[in-house]
Length: 309
Image (cartoon, rainbow, N blue to C red; front, top):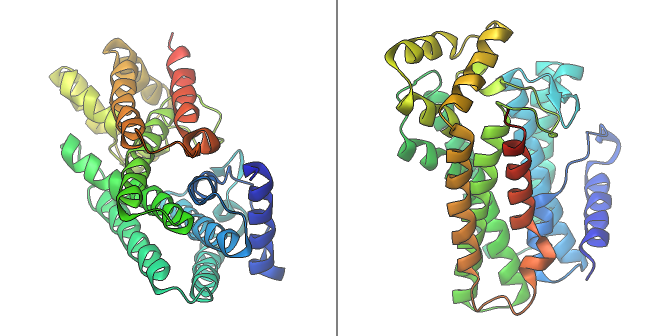
């Protein structure tokens, strides 16, 4: 199976599901669909429908996230929220959720429905936890990891597990797939959180996390290392949507002063190593080479760190 060709089938499936209400959103990389297809090893109609439903659910959460975060950009283009406003974004996000679940329910597979609905509930729980802790500079590493494992890791984990189930592998293999998805998804989110502070190629608003009061791993590490005066400065900037650009740049200067990029990179690498080990002696099927997610995350992190002055 050619993953790129299978992804094109997923794109076509999404267009068919959305019909005339497809607003031609900026195309994503379909990372989750690729993960599912790599683990399933199939591109039949059922597999394409599952991959498309996963991507639709992810897309719906992004549209709602952009409303909550007042994000101007998504994938290098004006976000749906920026183009259409709050009301249309909420309505369209809800529409995508409904269409995704219609596609899932059409499979008639209770196990798949249960896995996906459980995953989505945890994704939303993680996002609610993140919003509840907004502006709280005292957020701990443990609390941070709990949040991102729910809001990002869980969907990656279930995606890989569903792929293993579709392939027909045993329960042990499915559990390894789940662990692979959780650890690689967590590393993916850590990398994304670091990129928010430094120039990257994701086409998102830079500094959106700190403007919205979202405390992520780079800021947690910085607060642990900086002086009392520097911490007071960080607190004054956190959650200030109108923060001066120079103040925001000063945050990144402090991060470089305390070598935060390298520290965050090491944290992400620990999860990537766990992901690789989870598939030891279980990847004679070439799944990891097919999805390529581990080198993609490593390359992205390396690109961020190489930009350090």
